[in-house]
Length: 293
Image (cartoon, rainbow, N blue to C red; front, side, top):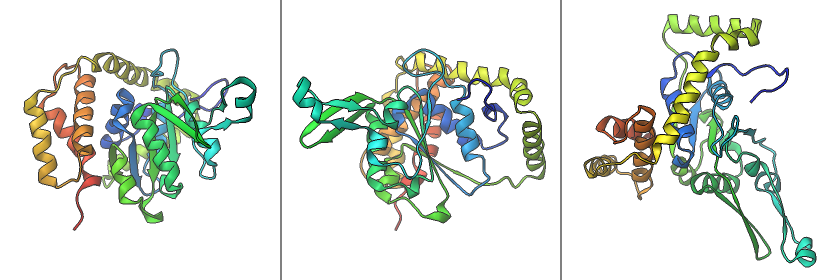
C-alpha cells in the first residue's frame, strides 16, 4: 500500500505476461483460505512487483478501505511474527495481555514473505496454519490466546538459493513457477513500461488506475459471490480422479483444487463450478505436489 506522497507501486494491471502468476494471486485475493501462493523463480521475473501491485488495489477482507500489506523481514523473531503474551498481566487482571505481531497486522490483507525458503521452518508452519484457518493461536507456558488472522499469504523464492522441505511445500495451497520471457516483443514492452514508470511513477500509475480499479472491483464482486458457488458431485469426482492420476498423497490437494475452482468460478461470474474451473485449480495446485520417484 502507498499513502501520502509515497512512490506508488508498479500497477498490477501493467505487469506484462506472467498470466499464471497474476491469476494465482487474484484467486488468493478472492479466497485467502486457499492457503497461500508460493512463487518460484529467478530474480527479475516480476515476483515482488506483482505482489506489491496486487496489494495496492485489493479491498480489505474484513471490510473498509484497502487491505493492509505486511512484509515479513527474514530476521524477524518468533515474537515479532506471531506476537507475544505478557504473563505478568495474568496475575493482575486474570488474563494475559496479548501483544500483536506481524501476522495480526496483516489481518484482512496480505502477508508477504520474500525468500520464504530461507525462513525458519517452524515460522513457515505457523504462517501456513494461520493462513489456512484464519486464526492465530499463541501459547506460552500452558497459557494460550487465539486471535483472528484472515490474510492472504504469499511467499517468493529463488530455487537456486535452496528449496523448501517437501512437507512445507505441500502446505502452500498454490504454486507458480515464473521464468523470464523468451518473446522479444514482450521483453521490449517490459523494458518500455519499466522505463516509463521509473521516469514518472505517479503518471504511469494514473494511466493504469482504471484497469487496476477494475481488477479490484472484480475481486470484491467475486468475494461476495463465493459463498453461493456450488461444486457439483461430477466436478468433485473429476478432482479426485486427477489427484489419483498424479499420485498425490493425502487429501489436501483435493480440497485446495475444489476451493480454487470455486474462487475461479466466482471470479468469472458463475455460481457453479465447471470443468474449466477444475482445470485451472489443478494447474495451480498440483505441480508442487507431484510424487517424485
